[in-house]
Length: 304
Picture (cartoon, rainbow, N blue to C red):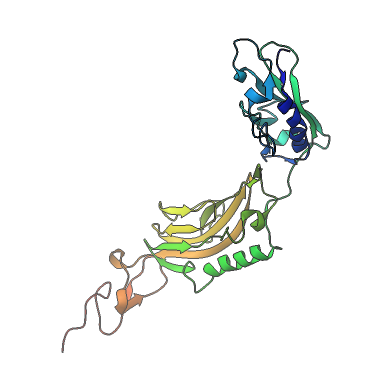
């Protein structure tokens, strides 16, 4: 064909092929194979314009395009792929239907518009497997310490546990990922290149009810998807079991759970400093002390 690899382009193909061969391929994980110019020693050979020579007259360098060919697999059905037009950087995401013991033959190729045979950039064999179950890393020291701290925050006697007034805001600190990164906190997680694909979410159900029926604590409930930190404004009355979960791909794991009772006194207020709830009802009345009176124990005693 009219187009061919330049000397600097040829010098990088073995590095691209080595990276592809050295990658692990799991269902749902995105594997990134760096293209031209991403390797040490090639600062001036970082795109199509420098990696190829001999373009078709009057066509721009971008007329050279990249394709991924995997024998026995169809893009969009068996796998997803994204390839940089500039450098050939390739992101491959195998889908569940690709899992098998036998390897696939894969090739990254470049084409121009002549219709001639493509230029092979890299050939490799890839075996697609399913990761083991996503789980919390109970056996790692920093993960153990972080989980102990998180459990303490929702233990009896601490702020998040038990009785709360309607419209209270409850904060539960998440994981300190600067001290213990996500890759140490969890195992068998999905990846996007070298980055863990892990997010956090909150699940609440009515206490004693069907655990599959999700309940709402209120509209202003926030979960930091990177650390699991919670900010819960308790707008809705009721008794709940609250669960913090971590998700990776299509798998999730329960991290902590605790009961919360959201209740309200007369007139939507508490009993103040001079009374207390008469019982543990969700809508309660007040028992006043020190001769105070009123629905919310707001009336001071009469002077003698």
